Image (tube, rainbow, N blue to C red; front, side, top):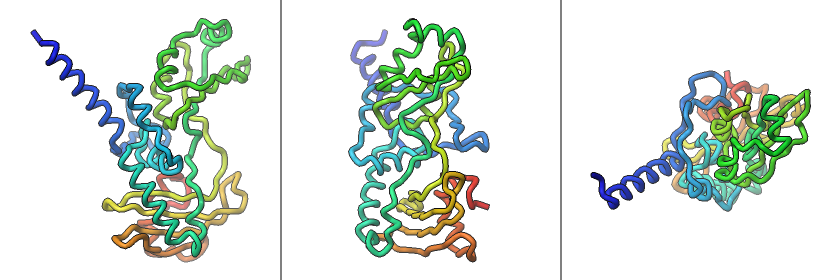
Amino acid sequence: MMTNRKLTGLILIIVILMMALLSSCGRSVRSTDDPDDPVVPNPPAVTPGMIDSADFPDEEAALMALWYCDQLIPAGEIYAQFRDALKSLRRDFGRSIPEVNIKFRFPAVVGELIIGLNDSAVAEIRNGTYHAWDSLNTLFRLKKIDTSFLSNDFNWVKLVFRGRLHPNYLALYYKNLPGVIYAEANGIIGDSPNIYPWILDGRVTFLARDAWGDCPSGCIESHFFYFKETDSGFELIGDWRFWTPVPDWWEEGRTAFCKYQPHGYCN
């Protein structure tokens, strides 16, 4: 028979393993060509402590880590690496190349979900008797439920959470609830300037991109600046504008850009 001490130890090990799974930064391998389709068939168990641990103070670095790690919450060590690297990059080049001051834009609204519902679930929500998502809403620190889109034409609600949670992975916990037809990220429309982080051989790289020209449909013009981290700080590898000869470094430098928007200039 297992003693209380052994049982407590086993529970502690399980919790530590769950936290390590969510706090490490193992990049996912997808089973489809859709970059917004996570491959996690059964999302891992989550504790309130895991959600609380992702409340990092530097929002931009946290969003970079959330996107790069491609999981529910960002990994702390990647967050710190991007935070320190951003400070170094902007200290060295912030005046000479102002494009490095462009803020990172996450490709969806972080901490928001769009939930499509069947008629039965809609009726329960309207009369206050739908409770299937209560425990998840508490765990993920729900801020509000926007029911303004509940109608015969749409039948969906927007859930807004307090933390920085990756919406594509957050959706995995809601999509199989009773009455839920779909759960998905609240996407961002259009293109924009951005700065794309990556890690190559343990060192941070940044691809800063100025962009303009009909950006709501997809920016026509782009000017890229590729930087790599060295022992003495960041080095500018080169810059490139669309519609000019492609430089040798683009094959390496475009990695983060192509991961961010694979239908861009990635052929």
